[in-house]
Image 1 (tube, one colour):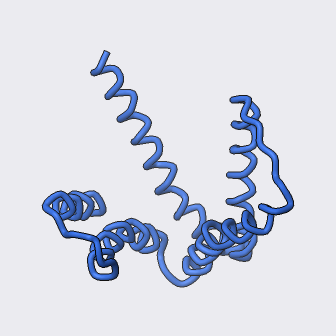
Image 2 (image 1 turned 45 degrees about the horizontal axis):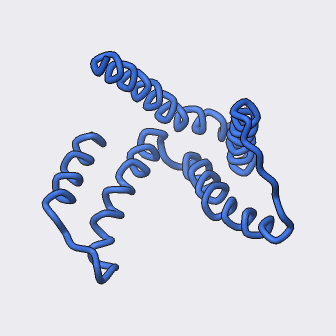
Amino acid sequence: MLKNLLSNNLLLLIILSAIWGSAFIAIKISVESIHPVSVASFRLLIGALFLYFFCIFKGYRFSLSKKNILLIIIIGLIGNFIPFFLISWSEQYIQSNTAGLLLSVAPIFTLILSHYFTKDDRFTLLKFISIIVGSIGVL
């Protein structure tokens, strides 16, 4: 049972890695003929449609109040659209593997910099090991 679960999870992880990695190549190809704003918009539209149909399939119900719409728009712009646009825009000038590499090291640098920018963060052995393992994973 456990072996089957691990093999299924490993397969899903490999599929997820292939999808995530191929996104940078697709962006590089797309920005040669489509404006970066359109590329980012299409990415978000596709994701939103998948999420919408997934919620319908699972029976999740949600409603948007007028009070929260502005907040949702701001979070969507800052958390999704602007980063996706900047990735698309940057791939006009750098190679797709460079963009992927830069985004892959962001969590590692976040872990390192959080030690210097927050008062209550302690640099532990577990964090050091996480940085080493993450760096090996990026390579």
